[in-house]
Amino acid sequence: MAMLEFQDVEVFYGKVQALRGISLNVDEGEIVALLGNNGAGKTTTLSTASALVRLHSGSVRFAGKDISKAHPWNVVDAGLIHVPEGRRIFSTLSVLENLQLGGYLVKDRATVAKRIERVYELLPLLAERRTQQGGTLSGGEQQMLAIGRGLVAGPKMLMLDEPSMGLAPLIVAQVMRVISEIRDQGTAVLLVEQNARAALKVTDRAYVIDNGATTIEGRASDLLTDSRIVDAYLGNG
Amino acid sequence: MQLIWDGLFVGSFYALIALGYSMVYGIIKLLNFAHGDLYMLGAFIGFAVLSSLGGIPASLSIGALLVVLLLSMLLTGTAGVLIERFAYRPLRGAPRLAVLITAVGVSFSLEYGISAIAGPNPRSFPIRLEGEVFNLIGARVSLPQIVLMIIAGLLMIGLNGYIQNTSTGRAMRSIALDRNASLLMGINVNAVITRTFFIGSALAGAAGVMAGAYYGKIDFLMGFIIGLKAFTAAVIGGIGNIKGAMLGGLVLGFVEAFGAQWFGGQWRDVFAFAVLILFLTLRPTGILGERVTERV
Image 1: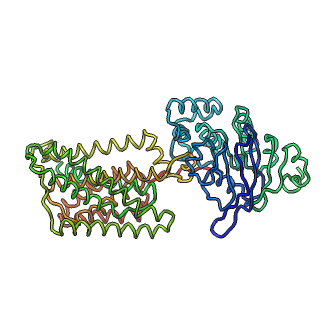
Image 2: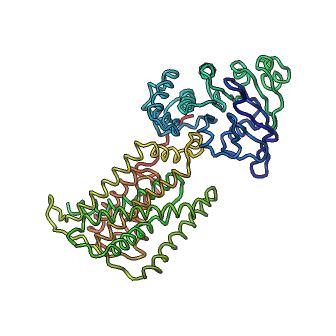
Image 3: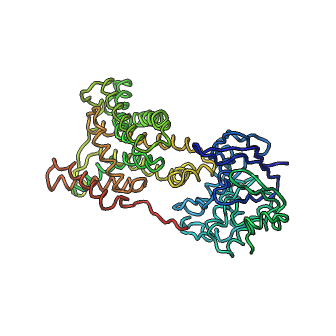
């Protein structure tokens, strides 16, 4: 069953058209990559799903409901969590407070506390730094915190925007491992990446966005050898 | 000793008003120039409430004052919420100058609105807190002063606890840091901004009622200077910073008390605003200026 479904979505920033027809779907428990060059519309696609950006035409459905006109907090409440580009950690709040904010809409405090414990198990380095200010963490730790913060909301699906950005290869591998663990626990993941090779290794399927429209779709294993992808996004490495 | 006490007393008023200034600035980066007028509005609401209750024996003054205080806070808070909803929210996303000018407009509307309703002449407050003056380690202190300071202190401690320990308080801090990221946490930003306006305005209203009861006289322009003073206090402490606003209020109180003592009372305001200019040029982020520890 489709968890997230985009149908011919178009988005404008003022007069500039950012999305010219995005159609994609992510099924339950699936992990899907969204690839594309800078400015292709990957981040806008995620922002549209999380209702930070209004769509001009087309529709976005999540878990069977139309969320094209929802507010951002409705989307979060429905279980679709967006971990934004650049982590966007609340820098002067502690690690714990950042995690607690992830569970802002969860009424039951005990549930939030339990989920935070689970995040600490999954990402033990956050547990060591729970009282530290978010802004003092390293880039990799901040990324883990951003993901952990998303998990506290109890997501049905996570959308991760460039989690590998600016991280050393070793840390990228760690982040990717955490992402597959999250999927293994049953959460669907939509992964936006410029690092196409790293992304295709952990995902089931992928879409390529070019100039605001989805152009290529396929199984990750096929795309790794697809000449169009290899030439444009993987280089000769 | 007397000077310290005076500074502390006046400073706690400034702090109470500066808090609202700073909270609103922190969360939507708006200098709400109408904030001082909410203080005035609070005093007039207190006046109206007292008048409509009528005939409270003077002996009950402190207890009655508390009831009036709560009612006035509620009403002033509501007024603040309405101002945000109808004057500022439609301009969300507009250039900051446009909102700033709107704030000045709201300020005038409040001042002359009240002047039209209640008349331009000063009114004397129905309750006048009077009490014995006694000596406390070298300072002349009166009972009302102590009571008012305790109320101000409790309000500030309560607010600080609210902001530090509740989920809404955390949301306020997160919105101040990063509005879009807060939306992604599922925070209904509009609702939190509304609540911020309510609390900030209610505190200003409380200060207004307390000032009315203490000085015994209110008029429609009483919020103007104190609004500027509160702004100064907020800048001294680091605008957007809650503890800074409290500290800034006290510092400003001391500066004024000592300045007035050494150079004469007529220099009081000169001192306050000289400090403002000094801070704006030398340390615009204030004493506790926002810590910037971003690491990428």
